[in-house]
Length: 214
Image (cartoon, rainbow, N blue to C red; front, side, top):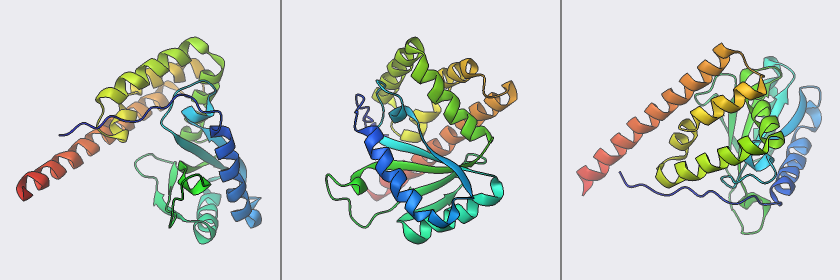
């Protein structure tokens, strides 16, 4: 398997600006669904000042309940270039992929993003918000996390494997956050292991196909 180094960028003060622009687009698309969601949150490493990150804006739309998720999905996919992917391996985290027809350099469409819809109180939402809070407030753990991210980026060949291998430091941060039970944290760890195995199997199939065609 050929290893390709993942891009981990130093913190960019433009990341919050990108988030706010994308948020404005989403709010426009959801103008008739304001009773279906509570907030639109900037999560992930790009939401933490001073933290290095993959230059991808992670966004959570906080639905009032599970029943409001599909109306939100439909409103977004009807008016914006997003494709609904379902839970995509993580229970209660509904993913949408951004699929613009063009990605003109310098435009907001050129900014990579991950868009999720999570119900209020759900495990994925508490996971994302807990991580954000600790990393924003605790400089020591933020520096430790940054070191782990850089080390993994040197060796991981796939973004999903990269994410799965951060499980140890993520568990440490979530313990500090106190937003999840022990059982919920264990489930996140299990989900990440399953995700890594699925990616590995996909890579094996890909390598066999490439070998067979050469």
